[in-house]
Amino acid sequence: MEKRLRIHPTIRQFARELRQPQTPAETTLWNLLRNRNLKYKFRRQHPIDFFIIDFYCAEAKLLIEIDGASHLEKEQQEYDQARTEYLEAIGYKVIRFTNDDVRYNIHAVVTGIMEEVESRINNKNSPSS
Image (cartoon, rainbow, N blue to C red; front, side, top):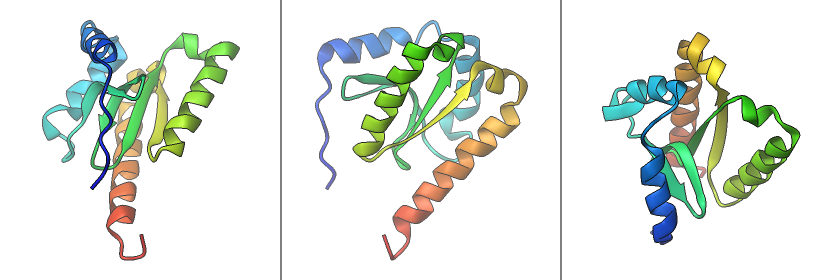
């Protein structure tokens, strides 16, 4: 059985506060992911350790981040890289899209998400894993 980590109450409350208001890109993607519209359950603004993830699919241990313009700054890129490395070291897969990806090419974003979810679930369920 997988060990569940207790989320600090402050982090949990902050995650709840981040759910409203969402950015336009988050709203667009959430409308497609919610209610198992794409077969799998996704959560939004989900806390993992001391990070809050934009979208999370527990079944695939997939974390989806939607990055705005601030993520182009060097310091933010370094932080994002360290955060990704940490999360992947503890068993998650992180994929990132920009606000523009969601705004102008939502079909490719959804396709990329679904390919990653199904790949991770199929690999998890294969006899060699």
